[in-house]
Image 1 (cartoon, rainbow, N blue to C red):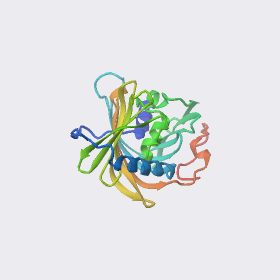
Image 2 (tube, rainbow, N blue to C red):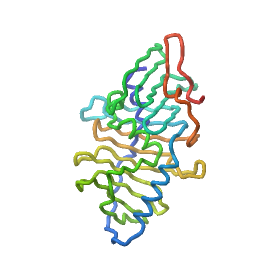
Image 3 (cartoon, one colour):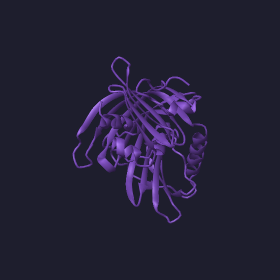
Image 4 (cartoon, rainbow, N blue to C red):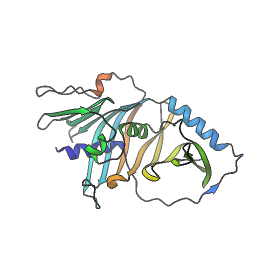
Length: 270
C-alpha cells in the first residue's frame, strides 16, 4: 500500500462525473425573488449541517505526476468521518472489511497509518496537504464543505448576477468586493444545490456536481458527488451510503495516535 494510493483515497475529498452540456443562460430580471430565497435557504442549511459519517465508494481518474495524461485509475471502499471546519478521517477498507490504511486531520495536524507495514507519519496540516498526498487541489476545509453538500457562504462574496439555466434551474454568480467572479452555484427547481464552481485569480480551481439526492434525517443530501480539480487534472466519483448527519463525535476520532504495536481508533466509535 503506497502513500500515492492512500493519497488517491483522500480524493474522497472530491469527484467529477465527466463532460456535461453547458446550459443556455438567460439573465433573470432584478425583481425575480428566487436568487434571494435560494441563498437564504442555503445559509440556513449550512447552519444545520456540521458533520457527517458514512461509507463511500470512490472511483479515481487522475494524473499523479502533475503532467498531462491520467495515470491513476482505481476503485476503493472507505469509511468516512468529517466535521467543520477542516476535520477529516478516511479509512481505506479491504475486500473483507479490514482496515488497510487510515488518514486523519484535526485541522491542526495530519496523521497517516498504513496497516501493511504498520508505518506511521504525521505533520502540521496546511492548505496544500491534500495536493501533496492526493494530487487534489482542495484544502481540507474545501473537502469537508464539498462532502457536506452545503458549502459555507463567505461574507466576502455577494451575488452579482443570476440566470435562468433552464428546467427550473437558477444559476447565481458570487463576486468579491472588487467585482471579481469567485464562485458560481446552480440550484434545481426544488432548490437543491446541483453545481458549484470555485474560482481564484480569475481561473477555475475546482467544480462539483451534486446528484442522487436522498433524505437523511429529513434533509436532502447528495449521495453522488463528481468533482474536478484543475491542478493535476484529477477526476473522481464519490458515492455515499449509510450516511449519518451531525453525529456526536469525540475529538479523538480525528487523532490516530498510532504506534508500531497499536492500531488507531476505529471510525465507527466515539
